[in-house]
Every structure is written in structure tokens, then in C-alpha cells.
Image 1 (cartoon, rainbow over the protein chains, first blue to last red):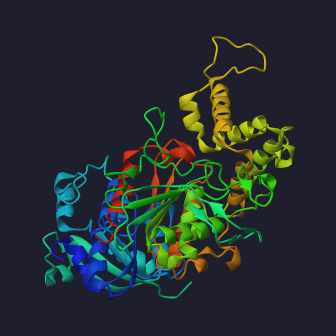
Image 2: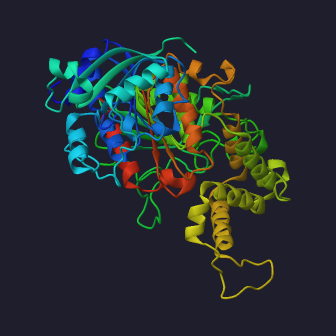
Image 3: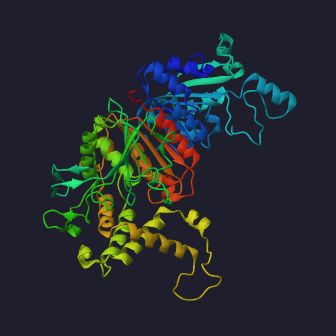
Length: 204
Length: 363
């Protein structure tokens, strides 16, 4: 598991063995590969980048080349135990639509995103008066793929408004530290936020 | 290969005996599990790879994918490529002599379907000592055979490679085939399919059928890039001769096809396409048909293919994911239209090779 980046290691702990998993924007397929080998999951990765798709094939991960922004209409309601989307929320055209599709298709959905409310970003903006650029968000405002950045508070407010229930949450930094202070003030100290959401509280 | 055991066909008729011509590349292993069946599309045949002689202008139709170190690596796999029943390149077909009458079958040759082909291919596999296909692979109509194999003999097919294909023809697809058939059948030299007796061929009709087909294999972009509005001569003549390059090209394609292909076989092959509908028995629910099969799938489509567009491949992918089957699906950028599966493009060949190299076979 040590080969996986910190937030993916956390996700692995959340996934029940033998589950059916859909990984949106699965990158090189590292998470699915690990879950297949160690949690005996079945499922698919969705990915659009040709190089990543090629990497998934090499890893023997079921890969479907598709654009998440186009939607998940090819998947039936509740057809997966988990729908996972790591670090892709902020790059989507319509994150709200994708989230509602995720909870439609998956019994549980796991989402991770970089917390824009991190103190470093706030400090950067406050002192320099410019859009934060960091090791983890290295692109400039004009060429970033991250067009819908949000904070921990934004996301939780969204879930409340959309009647999505949060069943698990955790926060890590890029050194895999996940201390109690971070859990106490996640919006200020959490670098990457992880959520498990359970579909609509009141099924619409 | 000669088959004496009668084959009862989907149409209700039986063919008492038949010959199947095939090419094979590589070596079958002792376990008989490293064989790959390559299925040809409408107009190709058993000559899938390599050159027959030094004077050959072109290698086999899928030479880009079959050979040492290629996607279907003949150092690992034993590749079997037959010409289908009904074809005109050595396997028994309408042009062959019917032993009952001593004359060519002509229009009496029974309708053959993709399902029928899978059944003779199974017999061929048994005779060759193949215990399980490591993969059944094909593009277009060939991909349909791979899909049908996974349904009819699921335990015999480890992997199905379905490229630029469709789960069944659309009304538009059938319409194009119908026009092609009409072109052949309305040729005065067709003689209701008995043209062999008159020592003629319905060349004009077959040529038009091929020209029409060829347009559907290319994309608008590819034709535009290749010909644009370029003229054959140096000026417009305001007559009905060949004025544009694209007309000249299509005529050439049509004429060279007439020299190598039999009109009755063309009719048969288009009908086999029309009839293909593996979900028919389950009221169109392909997912139900694929529910319990162990075969793993690799599907690919090409962006400018409008004969069997990416959406058609996605229908198969959806059926497979609904059924919980293992499937990978890739969509390649290409401006070569339907013919893209025959065109060497690195991303396509690399992906295909990656998938094939993960297929495990005995030593």
C-alpha cells in the first residue's frame, strides 16, 4: 500500500472487500490495481487521458475511456458499491451534476479534493493578493485545470443543501500526516479532504 | 480443411460437406491454449498476415497487428485465420461446385450467419487441437464473430477482442446493404445469381456496391484530406466522365474489387451482417445474454467511424458493465473512419499490444 499516495491509502481502508467499484478519473489505475489484488474488488476505471488509459491496460485494470463530464448515463442506479473520484472534483465542468450522478450510480461515493481553505492558501492570498500557487496546486490561474476549487466548508454546505449524508470524512496532508489538530480544524489545516457520502438522505 | 460432418444452419438448411481454407501463424503449445482466432470482415479473407510472394503489393489485411513482436505476437500465440463459409477465396461458397448437381451453388447456396460461422470455427478449433482460444479477435463483422463466440462457447474463449464493431446493425446500416444488393441484383448480367452458367459476372452492380461500401468505410475528413475537390484532368469538362479525383478513386476501388470478389458472396456477407443480433432471443437485452460468461473483453472504436460509430461499441460496453463482466474500452482519435482498424496508429497498436501481452498462456 505504501506505493499509493496518502489519500488513496486511506480510501483502501474504507473499501469493503469484494466490492464493486467504479473509479472516476482513475489516472494510471494504481488504486484499482491495489484494490483488485488486496481487496478482491471488481469494477472499472473511467479515464480520458490516453497515456493513463495505456497505463491501466498494462496494470490489467478494466479501463473505460470516457469523459466524466459527459456523464455516467451508461450506468444503472445503484450498480456499484462504491463510486470513487479522487482529486478530480475541482477539474470538472459541472461538479454538482457529477456528484448527483455518483450518488445515483453508487451505494456509497468516495470523493477527495484539495482543500482550498488550507491556511497556506489563505495566507498566500492575504499577503500576496494573488491566486495561491503551491507544490500541490502548481498551475497558474490561467492554465490550471482546477476550475472549481472549493473548501471543506463549501463541500459540506453543498452536501447539506443537496441532502447528501456524509458517512465518513478524513483529512491528510501530502506527507500522510493526519493528526487530531487537522481533524479539529479541517477547513484550516486539512490539505486533502476525503469524504464518503451516502446518497440522498431523503431519496428523491 | 475438409469437413464431412453436415452443418445445420440457422436458416434451417444443411450443408452436407464443405471446405474451409485458413492460414496459421506461430506454433500451438502442448496445452492448446495459446491459440488466437482472427475473424475477417466483409471483404477480407484468410490471408491476414505476411506476404505470399515477393510480388505481393500488400501484406495480409491485419499484418499491422499479427506477427513477431506485434499485438498478436506470433512468438507467443498460434494464430488461426480462416476464410468464412460462403466466401469466395477457397472456402466453400456460392462459386463452389455443389456435389449434388455438379454445378456451382450460385443462389442455391444457403444463407449463412455469424452464428453458423462460429459453429464451423469451433469444429476447426477441435480439429486443430485448440483447447481454448486465448482470444478471438476481429474488426467490424469480425468483431461480431468474437462477440458471438463469447456467447455461444463462453468457456472456450478467454478474451474477445471486438474492434470497430456493433451489437447489431442499425436501420441505416441495413439500408446501405440493401442498396448494395440491389445494385448487384439489378445488373443484367446477374441472371438471378446464376451468372456462372452464362460465363459473365455482374461487374457493374458489384462495382457500384463496392463503391457505396467504400464511402461508408471512410470519413468525410479522410476523403476531404485525400481528394478534396481535386480534378482528374486540368479543367472541368462539363460532361459525365470522371472529373474529380474522388470519382476516379472510387471507380478504381470498384473495379479492382470485381476482379477478386464474387457477387453472390457479397450478397451473402451483407445478409450475415443484417441478421446479426445476438440479443434477439432475449428481447434485445444484450446484458442478459452476456450475464454469466467468463470471457473478458477488449473493445475499441475510432472517432470518425460513422459506419460503426463509438456509440455502437459503447452499447456493447454498457451491456457488459451492466452484466458485471470484465471489459476495457478505448476510443481512438483517428480520421480514417471505419477503416481505421486496418491503419497503423501507435496509440491503437500499443494499447492492443498491452492488452494481448497480459493474456496468460501455458508455456
